[in-house]
Length: 414
Image 1: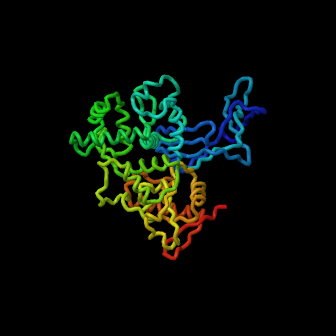
Image 2: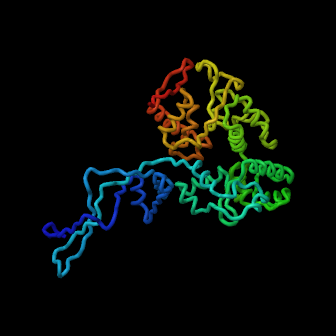
Image 3: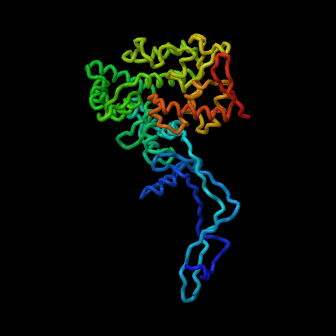
């Protein structure tokens, strides 16, 4: 069309369609332009803030912003004999745009809530199943509809619970007590049969069924191995048991069983050692943070993001306090908000001063890095996390030098 053409514009007080403009981030726009087909998913309940998930499983919270000027969406209508002028039809008036803010979703708490909808309760063995019939179930559709996260992150969270998909395609959690019982049994079975250090679910499943004398879902055995082990590349269903993962699981449930009370670190270490399977008992020479628990050891221990440490002593000498004077107070990172400001406010409400080593475990999951590389201790990833945490703590707190020379952060959130 040329600038000399004349158009008629049809308008009315009501518009046939309702549109919103979506403001894309540069990264998301680049993905859309680079891929032939790019699907964006909007997830979340009607009561939640909508979450957009891109093909890389990056999550964005979607917020509505009002524009100062109205925008009008017009479509072109061809001329006709009755109307020789070409017409632009007003399809919608837009005074709101959708803005995206990159975020780290709070997966575990929401996932546990959705899985709790299963009226059978947690799986405790085949006899428990036989006593129940009917009721509500949780399938793949329910998980994807109500847990706003990509497939890979959802898979990791299901392993963490742990949960398994039964033969009818319904997801179910495994009771913590039965999970530990199954772990102890598979460790003993592995030793009894003198199998190699690789734990193969396909070998263990029939042996465990024989020991239990009752049907046992293969998926439950696989879920327990995935929760406590690490997969072996190129060998499906094969795992090595990770002592730290077992210790973390037991530590979490010790806190829960004792109604989230504070523990002297020495007493807690003894309770954890007493519940550890004998096949995973330490010889005293390991460097996994399970053996020596003074104040300085807590950030490297299995409770690093489950509890914080305090000592009844001068902060300048806190790093030298022994485990008998160190008090562990439970504070689960998995139950904390996903917003950095809100989480830091919660941390300062629990304790007025935090060192960088203490606070990092409670914030590192908010940093956009490969979480598996972080767990492996990749130096570049650790440096990236340390820098991000320092930026947040300086934004929402103050840095103070202790007489010992260590930097600690104090609150300035009103």
